[in-house]
Amino acid sequence: MFEGWELERVFAFAAQVGFEAVEIAPFTLAPDVRTISAERRSQIRRTAEQAGIAVAGLHWIFVGPEGMYLTSPEAETRARTAEYLMALADFCAEVGGVHMVLGSPKQRSVLPEVTYEQAQGYAVEVLRAAAPRLAERHVVVGLEPLSSQETNFLTTAEETRRLVDAVGHPNVRMTLDAKAMSSEGRPIPDIIRESRGYVSHFHANDDTRREPGSGSLDFEGMAQALMGIGFGGYVSIEVFSIEPDAETMARRGLEHLRKAFGSA
Image 1 (cartoon, rainbow, N blue to C red):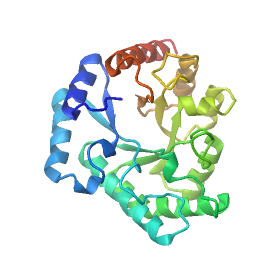
Image 2: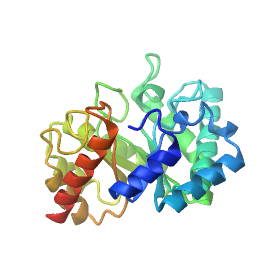
Image 3: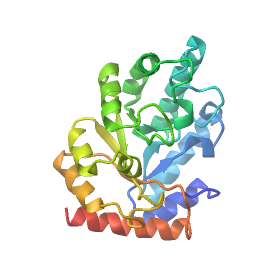
């Protein structure tokens, strides 16, 4: 959303507008988080604290480096992916984050030579391998259902809940995304209520691919459903189309969410 901005400027702006936390896409800092020095990690955490803003965590976690794939049939690729997931957990914790969104549709889709059942088994293997480090670092991974236009793996909340159950670890949960849920063709509040106990993070975006309030989605209904299931995580504004600019979208989106949750 703030492409081209220094993190320090993002933190200051977010705090000024009234956000409580910022979500970081690690590939915007470095192609591989393992190259980010301990000094830089400490600086990010310290700068956020000085601005009075929390680091919610990370998203778009498998965009870089090359070669990460959650459902690869190659054991070496799965091992490499699990190792990087652990490195991401280290980075997330060291900058003050608590949650990582596993969306990254291009790094998880079922390949032509793989069945869906095999892909699920491969994903379980990767996630279980990384789970002890997640627990050690007090970081949760939230598997994010996305529309079938983006991926062919985990395209509904129900599929995602089944994978969470298959992994069977408290640090592997689910991120719900408003725009993605709208593609299921069902009432979004129903999907939220059915996901009680699974949801660890929430992405708020409208069917315009922009900020909440820019389209037709009912965020008051979502807010009521989230509060009804006792959701206590972050609601994070994630956009894919910048119009007219990041600052305006952030302000409008936050105002719309405040109204939605205030009336819920």
